[in-house]
Image (tube, rainbow, N blue to C red; front, side, top):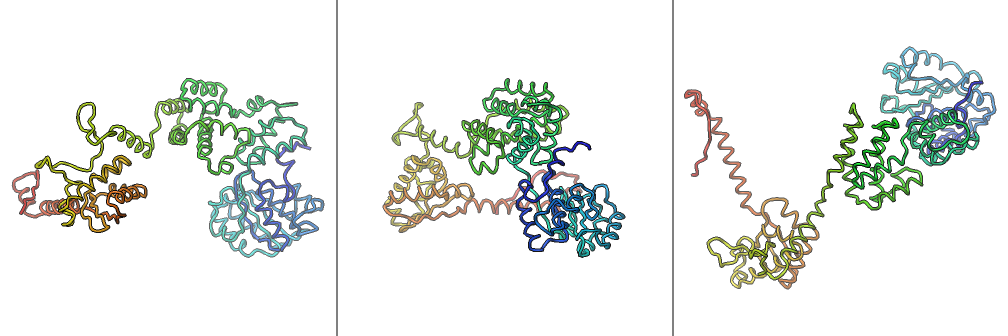
Length: 554
């Protein structure tokens, strides 16, 4: 008898043996128990996750001598034939090689005949998305209303390629990728049954390389069992499978975080000498920094990072001393360089260039940090009394809430000269000037950035409990003032100065709007002049050239 690989030898023969697909096996079990099994079922999902296996188990459950039952006996004639792969009433068809319309027509002709000795005639079509459009169209009517003794089961890794008319006639089950821990524990169980000794670290590496596919993991494990005798070491696993050791990824990431370009280039050189794929190395490094960023952010780590427990602890330790901003900067640069390395004919040089550029580029500070630093610098420079002068003898450059007009150097003007717009009582007393100036001085000590925006505004009116502030006609200034924290500080300071809690109203200035309307009007007049027939005739007659157009004031 020929050798059976692990994926075939230990293929699950019952629903409860399927790994990490409980949402599907439970539904099918309940459907069998209640007699509500659909006549057409589509299994979709990544490779090696159990689609064909579940289809065979369901076929045994429906054709078992004790069935239909959710627990096939695996002992009767029908179960044994399905397990061996030569059941007379269960047809496994490869959709990639049997994709023509003629073969589907032959299938339609055969389904009218009753099964040989089983309750149902079952058709399992693997990679069904490979069928031609004509074949799909030929299957439509039969799939919608098959004979009562026929069941269809389809399996595919690319359900988006199946016509919607087929999808709407099937009951769909989506398989999930299998987690690292489940793959590792299952392989460890098989190794114990086979008497093969291997380290848990090596099993974790195999599970990672499998990418959520149990079949891929068992194929790699089968290769190790074939190539080695006795206990296999982790170094032998790396050499036999040609995979990149996780220590290399951690060391390379550590050299990047420590800005040690020489160490980073040495690690790349060693990996190149060992024959590792530079594109795979870069993909692993990119995924590693993604995991570091997720760990540093600290949100739903267990769900978003699927790693063995030992490697997860190393990841947390490496991410702890690094800020989220630095990790985001590194991940962003690596991600944007991914296409250049993947498509490069010399990926090693592209990888080294990316690492050099990454370590020579400093991360940019966030806007919030920049504002905080500017505020701290302004407070440091403008500290002291209002009359404090700097070393050069000039007034301190801190934000002031008064300006001096060119014609009257001794007359203070509140925020652009809004005193004449105040109510008569306030203007005559002169208290509005001083109070608004006092508000600006207090805010310049607390939030200089808010004081800088208030300098662009003017106090239009102050009547009763209402302060009307005129803001220049641009969205940035009014948005800065209307921020929750800024508006709360402004109300608090005005309450302290005016002795009452005011209602602050922000109005847009009409001066800039008028200027904009004038520019639009002038532009419209110029366009009309250019299109005027007399202008065109003059240019043509005198062979001239239009140099400029001036709009004369009325």
